[in-house]
Length: 545
Image (cartoon, rainbow, N blue to C red; front, side, top):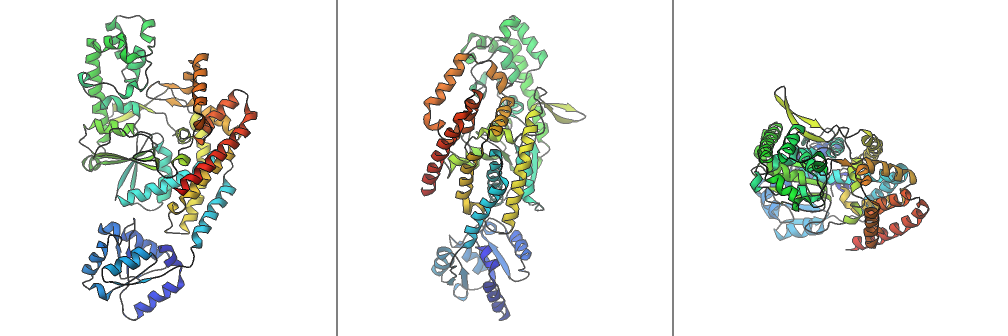
């Protein structure tokens, strides 16, 4: 416990006394930060030139827990085990383990750990003073994510990290704020999207099944070619080659993949030649855009995004035919696809694979809201083009700016809470939020009670404006307008059949929106109480696991 040592005048005096007798004093620690960072923080709290050297597990690729760190220290100091004394606050690692190596050890037991209690109280204080809206509660989750991301990157000695547009824009802002003057990790922002990376990642037509494309079953000729990023001239040429009317060209087929229309398209000569031309052209553009980072092409990319499957990572991995390694760090990971030794994925805040992470249900509640509140001040990337000797992204002009205006207001409040949490943790230099992970999960559940009618109106507006920039190329509002009354009823009944899900926080905001949209807001307080009690019980079960 570094912070207890730093705050203890008793230990500080003992170190000075030992030094005055001409003895050497070293720090031996299992920690994710390296020697230079530890030295900087020790100096910051007044331990200047106190310790003769620092031996940190992440630098040595060894640990006290495995006992091999003791071997390295003794060898480097050119001494013997029995001439050393280990003092620490962890009974197993600082007392038992060194004795197994023949090192004398002393267990310094703290009577209590008031900092844990104080820290929890301080988190609740910030929550009480700062959380005025349901969306404000996301500030705690995003701080917890940022801190865990930083520790993960430091442990894996990552030097460059790439945040993917668009959700990565605000995630990068938060991470840069967290880093402050620490420049040990350089952050970059990649202007990419599922749509802009999909076609360049595909194979030759005879070998391509368009798997991700057919996550959506319903397409027209026009729709499918647009999603594949064919130009308007390309699309018109293919239509003429197929010899079909404008009406037939835009008519949607319920199961396009298994339709005669799809088979006819795949066999069309113009489609075949233009597909190969566009595939190679877009691949060339995207490779040139990524060429700005030659070191990462050699050593591998580390990317950060909101989640949920890591599709863009898979596209980029396929872009290089699997010859460049990618490691993805996601706010949440709900499904694994195309995971290989050089294409790894991690859910930082929550994940379901290989097993559900601790407090998964709390951190993943209403997870699609993350996409709206993390919206960036630019449209999604549609394609790339060469201009003035460089490759520049083409933005999708169909997207409006109104969604970001809502998101920006929420982000400002989240940043305020984020800074409050940073100030709090700067007071306790070495305390990880993971020590009070349950408290962060509790606050996520508590934020359910903050949902107001105004919050629901904001959600309704943001959700309607949400633009699917890959499969449908439409906003949610545009998609809903196409629903028949029968389709709407089927969807509502499908929700009601999943009573457990409806009564949980998973769909709380979405189903509350259904109530307010149908003038049933008077039921929302009762529904809120049901969901809140359900999540409190689930939190208790998960905490006891």
